Image 1 (tube, rainbow, N blue to C red):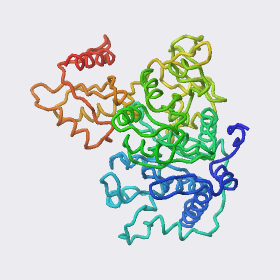
Image 2 (image 1 turned 60 degrees about the horizontal axis):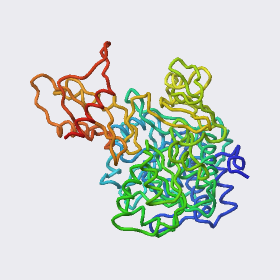
Image 3 (image 1 turned 180 degrees about the vertical axis):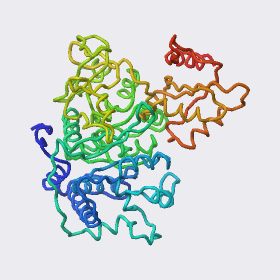
Length: 531
């Protein structure tokens, strides 16, 4: 039976319970120095759920996870699901300003955080933040420190011990209606939007992805480095769960480390963004590893060239599939399959997952025939409930027929395969990270030496797209590229900081005064090629 049928109607907690009952001793997570079975994840998440319930966490409450990829993230996610509460996964590399905004916007009542990572002292960071977040009642810390004497701050291991063997009230969860997670993504105005995803949203997409990949309990999955992303939650954690497979957990964004993990664990399935595979190809050429265990690679999260797909196939893994993913569709929207014709796997992003309907629309909303270029619109089990606390943005994201407007331009061919050709929305996808230019432009234009700014994407062999800040300085002002980069670093996440800064006397504009972004991008690209 297909997994999408087997787990129909389940919620995240019941899916874990089913797998833990049938395969309690099977490896679920392998992390540096430890292996955790399905049964152990189930029992530990039970203990943490009981402890959180004792603190007062209730159904519908938001619990933020500010953690790198680690077993504690996975266990905490399932504990929150068992309480009927809502997981808010946040990138631990966010700046304090961004973190504060998302915690305030989500009204998180509890945060589970790492104590130290990436050179950041999160204990100190939250000591500063907690007084500015009135809804935040509890902080749970993962680590070894024992420095807190605050009745709102607990160590993760202490809560596991306190909750072991204790009962808690299991809520009645409606999988199709109840929110499982709020995943933040940048908005076109620069402010992050919280995408509310139900239990059904993520489980349906996870099951459909597992079925399309042919994932089995014998598979060992590697390459899921960002658990806080929708890809990490869905195809990463939940797809592995539903298939009964094993997930290699590692937060080291290093090509050599990933290849070492493939060799050491005999990994069979490799997920990754294009940037990761480019780095691994380079590393493998320098120091070859035994990658013979790999049967399948799935590339997702950013535009991928036909040439890169061919290079991955020839240099790393015999079968390569490509997935088209959006946060608003619970990750995988469509994907190629291992048994697709080679030319379809090379030149398309595959076909929609089961139950997902795609239309290609003209600018006026009229549906176009096959082989026509237009905006991709989608309806299906993975499409979000909406944007948290933003009904206006939610309404604007759908057409009159209930289809989500993706902002991406594409073609559906005669065989039902999707070809992506561009994006209608002004978004730059840099190494799998969405950058909305207006957010960066607003920061640049706040600098006293900047008269106007426009941020555009240009092709980059490693990043997919690099971001270039085009700046018109104030008359007579003196400012350097490095000054503007450091200015952005003060409030923006690292991935949003421009890769390049170019100074211009003026921008090319339309008759109505709008910046001609495509012309500007071509100008910068030509300049870079001739430099």
